Image (cartoon, rainbow, N blue to C red; front, side, top):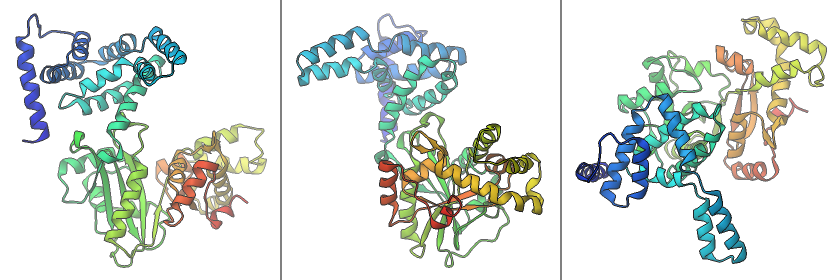
Length: 434
């Protein structure tokens, strides 16, 4: 008997107990069901109640969801008087017993509720979906951030690296999983099966992380191109009719798309583990590979650039450059060779400055840079006209960047970045900022 079958049998036994329990009514609302779930200690009855809560949640409309999330704040937050009492007791006598009591008082009761909901065979995907639903209410209901933090806290432990399974995805992978790759692709959109087929050819690799509680739902996937030397433009990699490179000449693995799939796992990082695992898989399969690099977007460069252009006090851009940069508002500026060549040195210099010097706190402003530099990669080079799609032009004026994972330097780069905020970069890249 599989684990899910066993859990379902327990749930069915609990539902039978629930039906026969004295005074039970099928129409119990979710508030009562949650209270019963938290107070019941039996496994079968607890599983049945968890299933009832799950079913009740899935039946909610948006108004009912918001009411439920507010209930989690009003009825399942820590009691401040209990926290103060336990803190005073620990201050007076810092014993293990008093520390345990303080820890219990500080933990929000909704965390216990979430753990109990997870007794349902579909508890984990429900909680992931619940957190995804919650995101749309956070902007207007700041008090719900406490609920989001508690869900994230639990999901981080349930989705740690030890539970994740890596799978290689190819054209023989079941169609229902392949369909999800098309739907979840977040960097370079796929227009149907023909695009996907090219991305799974012999000179391509695709790897995804899965979790046993989410069965065939990918958590994150990375698309890899096997190339000769660094790839500098993404359109040739994406073209459905492009030639397939024989594996022998390939000396470089290019990570050209990394997509997170589950909104409910937002802020929980899998990418660093995935890239390192994929490097190990590729080195074992293709020992001739000598370079591992990304071909990455720079998603917030133009947003930053527009703010600089609006800032008349900025010393980064002179008046002549301001007039020139106004040309990138033209729809097809990149198709004018003379204009593009004139813009190139200005945009490349500003983009290099942006990646290397612009910060959010002590970390790079660019989110993709933060991710790869934190993993131990270095900024290798900028690529002019690397992505001439509508999105590439809008985000980064068509510039892409290679982050190189130089395997004998990854740990050193990571430590320097984490401890001293050092942005590792190549000599070639440094010439753009010196």
